[in-house]
Length: 427
Image 1: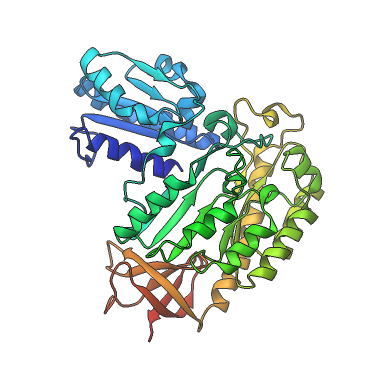
Image 2: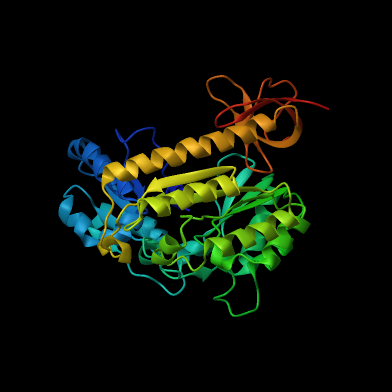
């Protein structure tokens, strides 16, 4: 979502006649778009602002802007902390970027915009067709989250769930298809909840069904899904719709029911496993990835052992795992029994070790199989073509002969590596 917001902001600045600069040195406008999901990202912001100061001193006319989730979280505190910062734009206000840049340039004002809006203007901004590849694009379908998990800052920085009108989404993706985009990734903090706020009886499964009819779009992905809102209708849609890829990111977060309850996740491990059973029954080849948090306040050795057991049982294709990070305004920040940093580090290491073995087994098992790969680009250093399978596995092709960006090619997997696959074009 942040990456796509950055693309939108860059497109708005280009409409002012600006072009992308290769470095802050000589740039007229510098925008730092921020994440607040973990404390480390916040630290990176202050480090980046510190590095920016010499450029601002050299050119006082440079416009410096912080946007996104930390901007929403800190608001005017950022201007007080950082004297060389000109503007702060919250998550609902990024569409105001051109106006703010003009205001700072002409009046030398310092600006803070951080109000939540009932209808977020940036939600309606079309994709600038500059996604991860010329043939792949992100498309926002909703913004915000209304779940209030006890550790998560997203409802505070992104606001409540807001679905984008389906007509807008269909029109945007149709336009992208006409520009030879072949794969779209639908974005939202909780895409499974799409349509609930529209009160029109329109679900995410129905949206996928409609998007599947758009000629030229060969692959549809989506992220992120909340297990509480995942249902059989979505599983069946994924299984029946030709364009929808056989991959889902379905965060588990913990294998302990006690910890899941403290996290306010709204499901038990047994309920998660049942949803996964329905999904795998509908799509036996589905690739499932997840997020996991270790060291949540009060997590005992037994709780952590249950998480490892869940990972062994489920066998995710890949996970994104993190140490618990206390975030401002969240309920978990002030919970008792905070876990020592060294214990969190040790537990995270064990999770990584286990998941690396599971992922490596999947990759080794893929050797000798034939898969469909959408070629997304070429490695800058080697010129090697790369792309992804429908299950979201990265594949590097050994040869560029007869391969172009946007091709759907049949590939025989030769080697399964730690984080990717290597193959050759066949047929």
